Amino acid sequence: MANISTRFFGLELKSPVIAASSSMTGHAEQVLKLAEAGAGAIVLKSIFEEEIYHELQEELSLRDNLHSDPEYLDYFDYVIKDESIRKYLKLISDVKARTDVPIVASINCISSSDWVLFAHKIEEAGADALELNMYACPADVLKSAETNEQFYFETISRVLSVVKIPVSIKISHYFSNLAGMIQQLSQTGISGITIFNRFYSPDIDIESQSVGVADVLSSPHDYVMPLRWTGLLSGILSCDLAATTGIHTSETAIKFLLSGASAVQVASVLYKDGPSAISRLNQGIADYMDRKGYGTLSDFKGSLSHSSSSTQAWQRVQFMKYFGEKAF
Ligand SMILES: Cc1cc2nc3c(=O)[nH]c(=O)nc-3n(C[C@H](O)[C@H](O)[C@H](O)COP(=O)(O)O)c2cc1C
Image (cartoon, rainbow, N blue to C red; front, top):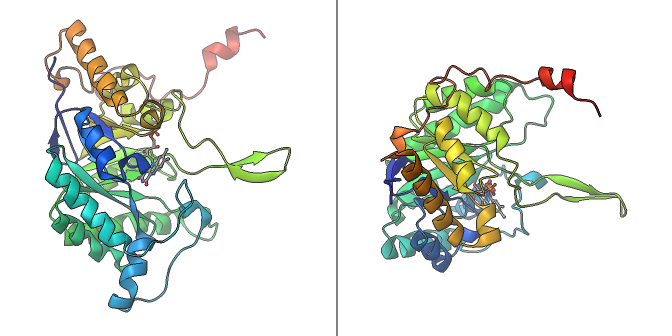
């Protein structure tokens, strides 16, 4: 099999296919199955800033700035559990003792409050790296873009000051100057950026006329937006780039590698097909490399990115040609 090893999270990974954070990565036995299936790394289910804050606030005598926005809740019913921190740290140390596959802890965060002090506990528990799932829905019309962006820089700086393990971030595309923001984030000292997370999205039931939740799992067509931005950005960042959302097949994973991603993070396909999806993606990437005569990922990674290819397709946004030709 071709050598599909790569580098992401500041770590050497045996495969570019990473099991993304979700409830599929919240239990030791499931994590081990994903490791056996050949995941390059496993990002554990996120612990929430709220959970950490909740349990630390008494000890640290913090002011109460808990958030209760609905968009901050998990995809599933979410209840702050007693001892959730202890359980999370135990999950890290348990899986670390049982697999060599890199284990990445994950924190969902929407503020840079004193919960960041907790990050060193994650390091002590043995996590190989830490991913910050960062998103505060920018819906407050009174908040400037700069204020919204400040949270990202402050949080990263504070977390980097308390841990030595590599820190990466997973973000949304909701920035007013997306390319500039991602480039600046890449210069903060983080090891990697993953674009773009998929969030809880509201949807409407027209019969009951109520607001509920849209599809939780991605569809295989959802990859095109992160693909464009991977192609545009991969050559101009100061840290590694990975992609997530809509990656269900090895063909799609290969598109991301060609566009310059160092790795892909998958969740929905694990819910649909189980851990074997990882081995299927790995095999598909290796078969493609054999067919094309590539020995390593670096032989083709980024060869179609905006900075390495002459195509203007990454920047094109209007269907000019099609408007002129199509008749309905
Ligand atoms: C059910 C479910 C739960 C998730 N939970 C988390 C989470 O706790 N933390 C996180 O950073 N991302 C979480 N995600 C996002 C995934 O890690 C992933 O980035 C996103 O779903 C896009 O990948 P996909 O299209 O392969 O699902 C979750 C996704 C799903 C579907």
